[in-house]
Length: 162
Image (cartoon, rainbow, N blue to C red):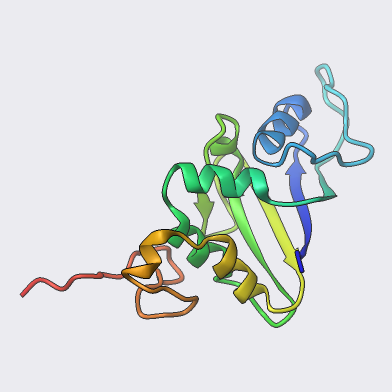
């Protein structure tokens, strides 16, 4: 069963709300938060606020990951904060603004973050299935295996030099 997907981002007073929305919807086209702010003229009087919306699927994200052939990295990044009932991961809003995906390992990134929360049972199995590719027939992978990246985002060495 597909997990519940919630996509959130912080819109600061200095952000252009239209550019923020365009950035998020380039990866998640059905993201439609309620009460999203309008563009303001100077001086901006609104304060920073987090906007969230539930979306139907992460198919747009998965399509970009498949196209760029980074499914193993994506599996590791998306599962890094997994627990029994879900996971949360962060994407660069700056990268998303040009239709690219960049996972952020810390909660502070230039250009802002997109927070993606997946809620559902057996989320790790679901992530492994969604990121499966033919290369796993040769080099099997699973969440938390010896090939996983570490919590800093550094890759593990697959082939040791002698």
